[in-house]
Image 1 (tube, rainbow, N blue to C red):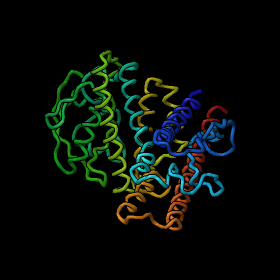
Image 2 (cartoon, one colour; image 1 turned 120 degrees about the horizontal axis):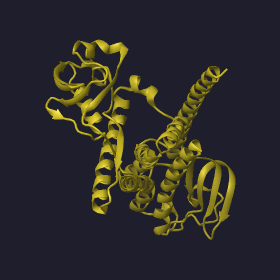
Image 3 (cartoon, rainbow, N blue to C red; image 1 turned 90 degrees about the vertical axis):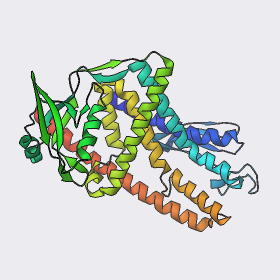
Image 4 (cartoon, helix red, strand yellow; image 1 turned 180 degrees about the vertical axis):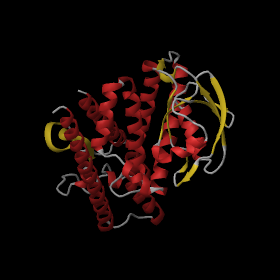
Amino acid sequence: MSVLAAIAVLAVLILVHELGHFVAARSQGILVNRFSLGFGPVLWKYQGSQTEYAVRAFPLGGFVGFPDDEPDSNVPPNDPNLLRNRPILDRAIVISAGVIANLIFAYLLLVAQVSFVGIGQASQNGVLIQQLAPEVSSVAAKAGIKQGDVILAADQKQFGKSLQEIDALREIIKSNPGKSIQLEIARGDQKLSVNVIPEAKPGGGSVGVGLAPNGKIVRNRVTNPIAALNLGALEFQRVVTMTFKGFGQLITNFGETASQVAGPIKIVEIGANIAQNDTGSLLFFAALISINLAIINILPLPALDGGQLAFLVIEGLRGKPLPDRIQESVMQTGLVILLGLGIFLIVKETTQLTTQLEWVQKLFQ
């Protein structure tokens, strides 16, 4: 059931994205002849007065179809309600509406998380040193850091119970490679002050420790609607910033971070684990994926919404669109690259999943 829950989350996010395109088009009177959730064989369809609605076999995708894309369409080429015959602004609204819908939906999910599930926080102040990484343990060991220590402050910044304190400490370590950082540490009943010098690495400073919240994680619901909206906005801002930083690291340190790129199988696996072990975090997981989906789609790459917006920008600068032959060639090339990347990730993750299953089977033989 947890796997189905994760797939359902992805299907809902895709549905929201495509509904954004659909509503933006129909609200402007633009003709839409197809609305599909999923790809592949049709499982169910309904023919409305103007649009065919369908659910297809593979839910990890979807599309909104326009008569412009069909050569055998019976709509006259000069019909003002065809998408291609609308002004650039109208088309830009339709193309960007999927991204906007995902961002709005993510914000609402975070508000719901705050209101109905609650904000997670540790039961005690500080950040726990959960483990020392063997390959760089000398950095932490020379500073006198031990597993089980609790970092109460770094460079006079005090750490409370918020789960974001871990990110704050990581940022201090990353931004100070080769520089001394003063840490206030609690070790049992003792209070210690130690200095640690993060090792310089391509992604920033590192001391080779695993961090965790200090104590049990408890959730406090926010019943005040205004406070919930404000906290949801702060969490939304944090997740968007974190996502952009992740993309930035992928670009600047591609060699080290490329292996961390996740495809649909890995995303479903992560979502299934969350659904099974911590249902309360499923809303946050959905919001995180929705924001990632929005940011990926807005990138100026062929076959994505951002690529189509790039064509509109070029059209606005030139005063006329690029020739159809060039646009089709660029879009097809981009589609082949994206499909190739998707297939590669699916094969890689399926192989890893199969290896994990074989290992588990051996344990019980």
